[in-house]
Image (cartoon, rainbow, N blue to C red; front, top):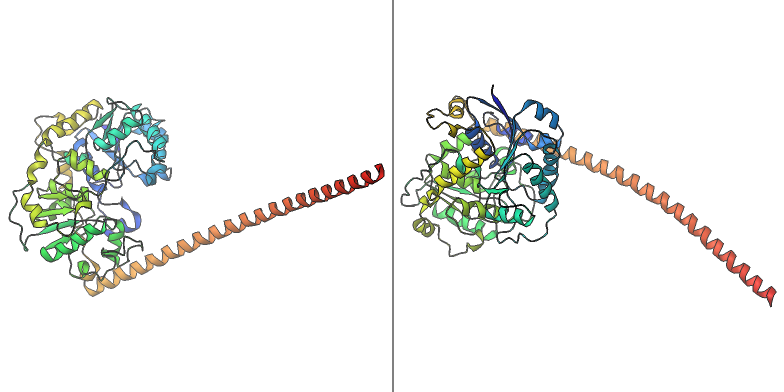
Length: 473
């Protein structure tokens, strides 16, 4: 009888979606980095005797699945996670905790981490500490240990009171995608003809954004690979990025940016298209950890500029060449970095880290493809090779006129719907505020009456006292 696994994932690795699905339905969440760890875990656990279904956070948040249903229909709940210990994820984590507490099946969490500044103080108090405690406690009641991203998250959970035997540093499961061997290609001389991928985000520090812009001139055969759905909205539909302090500074936030006009941007909505594209890339650098991982898994020499603790601990654990983004200045030379870096260092210890991850799976009783030492066929690969996925997404500015008109029209329609929804929400809020104000005014009138009565009563008592005083005299 086949084992059935329910896995946390925004989208099934086998699903084919169009850019509009990603924009309107958020089928990959908000960040394409989510694609990698679910893809890797599915490939690892998908044997001939296993069926895997997928459950997105939004379905949990909307109450579309109950613990009783999971208990009756699945043998394991597997939760590949990322920077989950953060304020913005508290509500969702609480929903997962409520479900897990009612389960009778094993629960396996891997790759979970904390979002903190680059130089973290894990002893600081955080608004999500209690939420994190409850979640980890619930998971440990159903598993041998919890797999965390790196040493920083391990220290944080130990500070919350969890023991060394309960926390297992396993890194990000995406690094285990293709087994114990990593083959990073030998680096070729970096020239102005080299094909270079650059990853970054709107929230990058200004010094790194300036560095990226400078390198466009030095390495004109570059491809900018944004990862957020807002970037896809801009590229595909021409909708400007939301106005923030970050988006207005040295970042492509309008469709007339040279990155888009010159067709130097690519957006990926599935992992196979990333692997295919990377076959012709010579070098990858940037601030996005899964941008680096996708390149490393493709054999591309990659350099990471961590901006915070969540990226730092993965880079350090997996031995990814890196330097803090905060240390980049006007003298930082990308050619010098490339020349001095041993990109093969990511191989150092990878085999040991991989088998440690497999030991973690074994300790938690999960079936996986590496249990069969003589395996020559990977079921996941056999299934996925016959699926035709969407290729890299190009900018609106590169489209034929008819397609451009269709995209712009759809974007305008989408904006109007969003504006109507925002106005409706404001009107509802306005109604609620009016009702609240009306109620407060009613309470105020009641209080005023009581105060008037009190004042009148006090005045009467004072007058009576004076009369009595005169009579006594």
